[in-house]
Length: 329
Image (cartoon, rainbow, N blue to C red; front, top):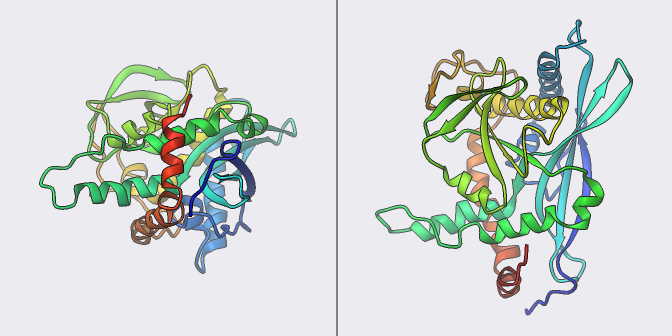
């Protein structure tokens, strides 16, 4: 079947709150942190404990004028972005992001946090688990296709510059991920009061290169009382573009997810030193009381990549190539 672009891509946003009653939508990637936690017999306890961890971490970092360590709580909104590519009304689930809100129980105000945080994408699953795998099949030396991440990057930039994004969100997104296990990170002399000590890797990772195609820069910081640096991907100026409470909302949310998903690194019983190499083989760490199926996550990532190939990449191949070649941003 031939498809044609009609008035460019249309982004359709919907949302649901992440709370103890949260149930993932049909189109949500099952490997997404919040979706993984909301499954099985322990789902409500998982969700309740995760939210409590986020709130505790937030109050620890926002300690001023907060003597009882309970002034704030965080609300999380899962924003799903579906894309109508040909004007037919039929959509494909392009990305999912998290929007944080900060509840100040002293002033009774609810203020915006940061949008982005977690980043979920079927097309990224395709790039890393299908395209990259096929490109290197039978080869002795690993390599990356020349156009790796180009389409995904252009689509993301197109979304952030779209009216759909600007009507919903005031500031550009910040995405917070774990450090790469294959890299070494060195602590610098730069220390931010909220983000903590800055680290720099000796070389860029494949994830860094992929996110740079999305227009995002990256800096690595280890917040106070953290055990390892986090990777912050952003547009513009990370340090001056966001308030302390906005930054804390991202740290508390994403560090909690990482403690559950990668406890060997983010719930380790020792802190990263001036020269740090993260390892999932670390045996000296503590487990949270939250159940997370990490093995299933790896298996499902391949299935999700194939889903994107079957329902998006292959049927719209010529249209996507035409759109990408004429992308102006």
